[in-house]
Length: 184
Length: 320
Image (cartoon, rainbow over all chains, first blue to last red; front, side, top):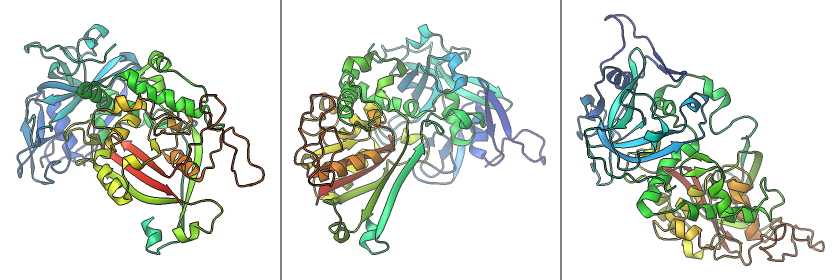
């Protein structure tokens, strides 16, 4: 598997270090799947691992195929679009770093890619927070608009050199259904 | 149980001791919060997807979406367990609460209000398991283990709790249930007292449904029907459970069911001094707080354990 570590050829790879809302992030030199995944996000070019045996993609990245156990994986470009499969709205943040953005949404977005495969109820569900189009945490009035079924597109929030976090924002180009939300 | 049956050992102590309040908070604050986030945690923790409630909440929300389960229905779990705790001198929270109290308590993360969540406690528990022959030489009526399932998982449970596999409302217990009932030789209709893991009101509800105490999708109706209360058809977590007695990773509910099977519940009823074995003159008054929580004629109990939406363990016991 290619190594996306920064630096000249021949130089030993270095850990990737980042920071998100003040929380330190680290990807060690041996964690090739996460170096690739977050490196692609830093280049605004979402990729997932695809299995050469069963042709399915998987999320989160890992050492083998989650569907068939195959170990021959390649990185494939995947469109960052889908619909909210489920979510929670966190009002009482546990981590001190997240208190500054509460209430925040954690979205589980089912990608259009591979929806209903391999089983009719399966899907690739990618986690992210609800953010604005420029990747700032969503204000309360935007939080109130999103629920199960909302059409989303991926945006990226830089967290350091070689690492950006995928996030979700409302897809302005899509017809938005009336989402299902927790009944207030 | 298997190790004893094949003769590898005679007697085993299973214990759980934790300073869940003063030291190691499940939410991961304190010491754990200071290290850099790495590995698989990079796909959850930076998003504030971290504590047990935050991690499980998408499955709870999806249950409401798919089946029309309401917060009011599920709040009945806390109401029922608080009534049970009012009969337990050792419960951490003995105060009875209403369904409205739950719904009006402050938000943690939707759909979980404060009172939908259990209480982290410092505690220790132990269970002694031995052979059936030896158990009959002991002082108390044995609680015989009929069947077990240990750490049964959904497929693909290496990261993110199998949230990519099938419906997220299909949980580890859906896979464990057929194994449990076939190994125990009884079914949910035979169970007198249940103990469904109530880290949250929703976990208790989803597991009762998955193990077949009601049809799939009808967990909300089941827990709000009165059946799970003392005096109902099949009381659940008669000690008050994690929501009210204390949080010990399910061990306290196993102990409670052993007590129910023995008829030796340690409630507020007066001791039968003539016996000297912990027997009480039970009143079976469940309405008055500070009274009784012994269930009449308990023969079979079920413990339904939850690790995550993807992983379950379970235990069925019989009197004698």
